[in-house]
Length: 224
Image (cartoon, rainbow, N blue to C red; front, side, top):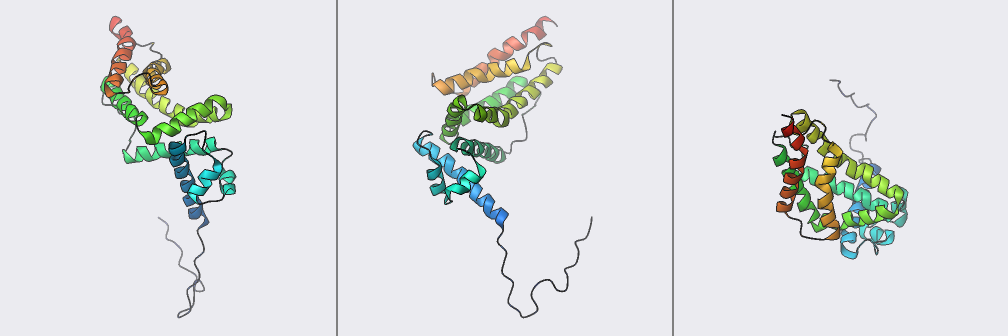
């Protein structure tokens, strides 16, 4: 381990002299402003909805100039996407997320994660920005691509990794399509949430896992 160099004899004020003024930490100030903007976007989209959300309102709530926002983001949708990414990161930290569980019991692991997804969908803090981004991504191809690449694909990849381990352990059919299995798990859940066709419950999440794994494991049972 290297030792930090000793300070130069000329560094700092002379004994008895007034202390040097502190140099403002521009990076820290930028981080604070950025976080204030993201928090403001999340709060406002829940209060007024996406259609009435404006850059001006976000700037006012965050206590920054409008140009500060445009220096980092091109649109309110882009702000909201980064806010959602930050929110997901905060949630993972708060829950001490250590990765997709692998207890050896695939059904239990999937039910654990899907139940957490149900809780998130039912949380107003997550629901408003998620609905806004879903709608905005449908009409803005560039935003939709970012939404998929940065928010959705990393989550889907975690499911696929867990399912791949189960397939290698013989818990799924050798030819089980991992992406299709993930979509069969999450598709009905998202459909029910998006269209509000029925309540989202833990029981529904459990039923999805049982139904999907019943089909995905059939090939494994018949081949044994």
